[in-house]
Image (cartoon, rainbow, N blue to C red; front, side, top):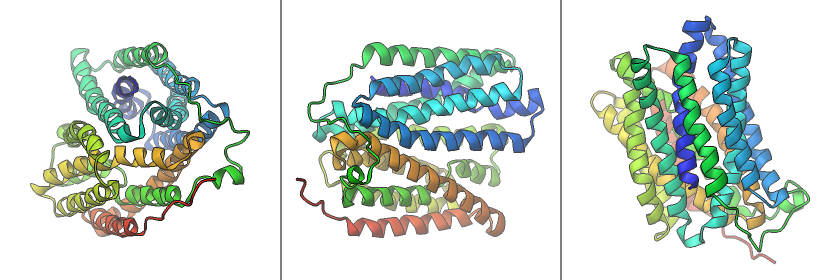
Length: 379
């Protein structure tokens, strides 16, 4: 049910996010710098709220109210976007939408761990990731089709995007009961030094591995830029992310199931080798570029759900929300730095440079896997 909620919300968000920059430029004559400011503020808000919401769910001893609030904020932002006539209102709606994402992600991932036996968590996170990724390519395709059908009526598409978002909220409210978790303790403040000390060395090792993965991947926008640089017509550039997400969505659940039955470190190491291969093909360009895009999707299917399951199994039950929140903030900050670095390398050394660097960072992260610490015994 949580996977279907994610899918519906992602369909709604992707219908909007693919059109919003063009709408601002063509309909409201907004400059690129203002769009950058709006998106930068939205991204920063998401990162900050992820840490806050995860810790708050541990403090309250409940996850669902925060998850419901997060999805509700994102749903409420869609009609506001459709009706907005000024940049200020659109920026407010965008911040509301991203605030909803920041509010829901860490409690939702912790809730999945609460309702899933440890032996099935890889499959559970893989299934949620697969359904979420279905939304990532259905949304843009639906937006393109509606733009053709409705003669480029942006606002009509924004109104249409409200429907799946509202359905997601109803599905969450009526279809996802919060379990009574007997061993979850209500904490006065999960971010105190004493409580954070319960997150032992294996968890912080996972945070370091997650940061390395993010540093090696940077923004997927560079996949699109690489294809365009190689001569792909502008109108066809969405096919890059559609192809990547098709592989991701199709394989995330099978790999999640597999991760429950084998050594997860082996699967994580194999995903890094796949990512290094993707970077090598993307650096060369040409026809191999599409193979690189597909390998990127394969890597995501192997690694993303697995990382969530590892965090859920490593953190204490009463600190799961905090653990997911801290991991998300660390990954978000590294993504900002990695994408900035990739852009600088592209501008100064050429299109292959960020992918060569990404392969190097993937190799360093692979080396980090050799130094997995052992947990100390719990009292």
